[in-house]
Image 1 (cartoon, one colour):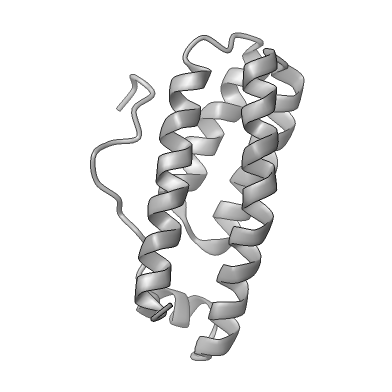
Image 2: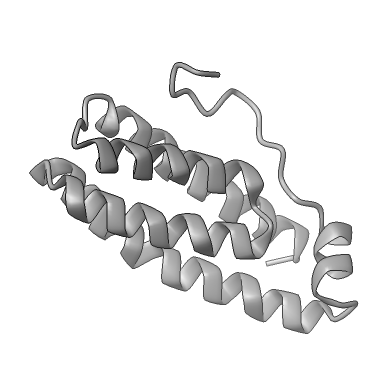
Amino acid sequence: MGDGQIGPTLDLISLDDMMERFGDDRAFIDELLESYFQEAAPNMESLAEAVAAGDAERVTYVAHALKGMSGNMGFGQVQDAFYRMETMGKSGKLDGAATLLAELQDLQRRLEADYRKILGR
């Protein structure tokens, strides 16, 4: 996938994996997920603004933050995608950033929808 594409399918972390990673406490996992999605939303908006403005420094900063958040949750595929965006920002070359942003937005929506389904919300 060296062309910047995220790919057609998601390899989401399972609830079992999250329970193993964070403890066998569904309420705690629910709280972690809620926190992740609440914090990710304004950061995604900020990333979109930075991409639209061609602000490579801000793209780097926000993508780095989102990469870390995703990694902390164990969302490896999402983390990798934010790493690619961060790398674009560091290079100062945002060609393809709008396309990657659209894919990241879709990935975040799908991730949240899948977890809401898993957690019964």
